[in-house]
Image (cartoon, rainbow, N blue to C red; front, side, top):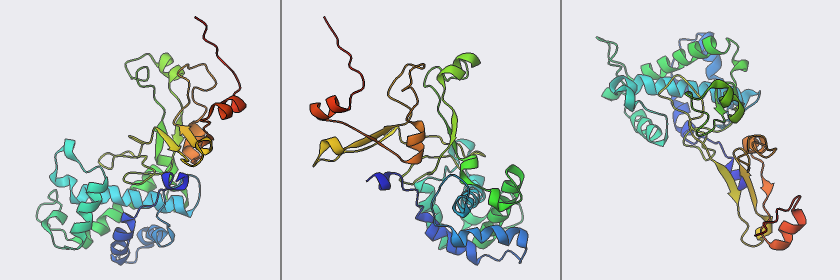
Length: 266
């Protein structure tokens, strides 16, 4: 169950990638070279260096461009496709209809685009975007370089609060795995120009009903709301890494694992 909760496999990629690989990019290595990342990409969304992180970054950049070219040209700003499961289902259906009118980008008067033209343009624009934002070298395209979460205090992290106060109560900014419509749902909004996390799992818990003392848990930040307490944000890195902590349940286990005891006296 712990492995499942941390799973970032994108099954929609299995649907889209074959169509991307069949598109003619006119043999221009500048555009064909990054597409080859998809051939060895395992559909995960990790952080850190490596070919899987590069493949994820390129795929999601293409995905964002594809949604803009296919759907956003006909939608109001407040209804742009976010890249969630509804977007995936919509594009999956359209892929089987190469001349559907939704493929046409209405922002190009006098030109009626087909599916393959839009897929080509999405890959071209993704290549240009990542070259501008990160590097011309695709090895530098790591998902974690753009897919980040900032631990912001619910109240005191508001921009209207003085910066000094924000800096005390807010946590840091971290590269995180996962994505939208994945089990490890560190969601991002493809309708914007950003890949920052917009929502995610507040905690992960696995309960062993055969042995409750074998249960595990991890919080997004920590179990103390006191900003100067050691436990204010001491679980964040474990949460990012998919690690968990033992969660004692029985009185005996709690007493055996305790470090401190608070006694409340009337």
